[in-house]
Length: 481
Ligand code: BES
Ligand code: ZN
Ligand code: ZN
Image 1 (cartoon, rainbow, N blue to C red):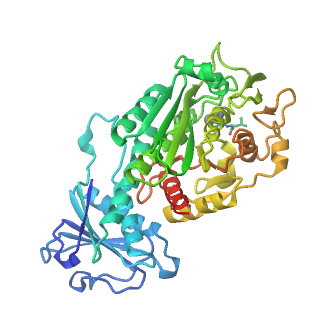
Image 2: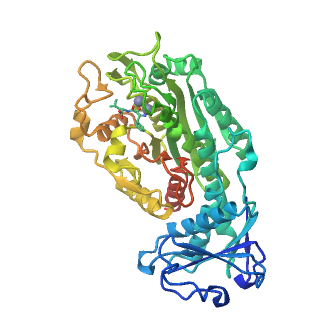
Image 3: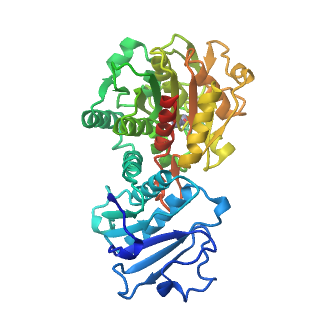
């Protein structure tokens, strides 16, 4: 999809569809077309839409009205939803070009234009790569934003961010027989080539030499070997170093602590954190953020077999700490233990990890907020604020000492579950904290939001690609400090 900006009056619009957003109770535009619309049919309530034919009175054929709700409730996300509605309309009408009139909002023109372009690009994505008949799906090729100010830069930013998010959605939708650890390593190499990043793929033998035993332990039940991927942006430059780390379980069966079969297919999404890390590296490099970025993930399957790890096994992680593996289904924290320890050795200014870590997170926050655990108030605050802007909303969770007490090992230094079945997301975060050294760190548990069960205004159901805009926005803020 191509997003253009035009400085013309909507009246001069020549695209087939013109979409206009309005706050509740505002005077309808184009009175010659809208004067007969009854208040019951359209009054501008949030999400309300109404379309009218122009009967050749204008250069465009259809006018689509979208309600932004009341001014005092305004949120930038309403603009993304407006764009989503416009794109859906164009798709339904099989129209290749649509114009979106930039609404006046309480946010800046640039922010509004960015949200509008993001919504359009996100709404245009649907995973069709496994369908043999592609023509069933219609692609909107041209979107024009009608604005009276220059918003080209905002649209460029939106394009980098939303395309990176769609890139994550597309990889994430691939199931485990396709998206293997090797495929993720291949994707990382492709990205590195395109975006001039340095890439290192640590294979099983490298991991053995380096003593990344926790990654190896999780992977040992599978016939496909685990990998650790390291991407570096602006390597060697004199810029502050930040790190992002992701959980890349390409399929989580639970291992010997096997999960119930119902819904197990959703565990293809257990790689979301790792794929988000790829998306963040893509966005950061395309936006040319003035930082160095270390983007790392381990990728492996978690399967039961004769060679799989067993409950009770004791392993030594990369930082030398010993772990009692009491439940093989608490595997994400094991691979993160090694990768967080590896990253913290390079002394970044902050580490942010993303992981579909615990089912308990879905119980606590449902499917609308990301759980954030952090040892640094400023970092947590920056994430929370960024999340309000991008509408990848974040909620801070606690990390008191008592939770760390709960995962002290009986035989080893730590155990991978408390065994009490209480505060499961927090004890998981407390476990991760054992592997970050002195780093400033934030852990994002994205278990409830990695995919969405139903389509909404600008996202199709399925992989959400959450975290890309959030973490990139956060890094941008941190870089400015
Ligand atoms: N990948 C799961 C967490 C998960 C569950 C993500 C549901 C999305 C939806 C993770 O590896 C896991 O299995 N965690 C266990 C931990 C338990 C054994 C302490 C869980 O949440 O049940
Ligand atoms: Zn698991
Ligand atoms: Zn898992």
